[in-house]
Image (cartoon, rainbow, N blue to C red; front, side, top):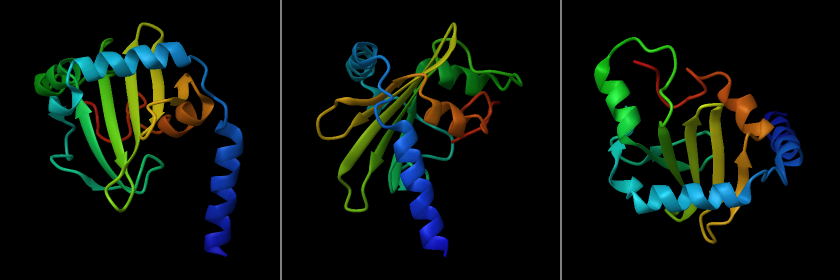
Length: 151
């Protein structure tokens, strides 16, 4: 029964989210910017000092990196209610065999978070903009970040 429920949930999420690539050009630009900035050399997200197992939809194992804006916010310890504009969080998701399956990036903009997820093999965006599947899942996090909390 449990396997059937997960299978049904996965099928429903896939049906809801397929084709939710709202801004492929913007997603392409975002990926280029984080790569040009060397995102894999950014600070690691709290609790993600190394690749670790994940039960989230972004891969069996994940590495999470934060840009200097997030790093500064975390270091401030100021009891923030929201992440500052300019915050970027990048997550590399891997299959069990260590193959890069996807790259997911969140960028905090003036109008809220912008999400993009890319196929790990082709770098083509799968989701971009404000996909409902991203917003619905991330709604449970502190200012829509689920992997770690606001300072």
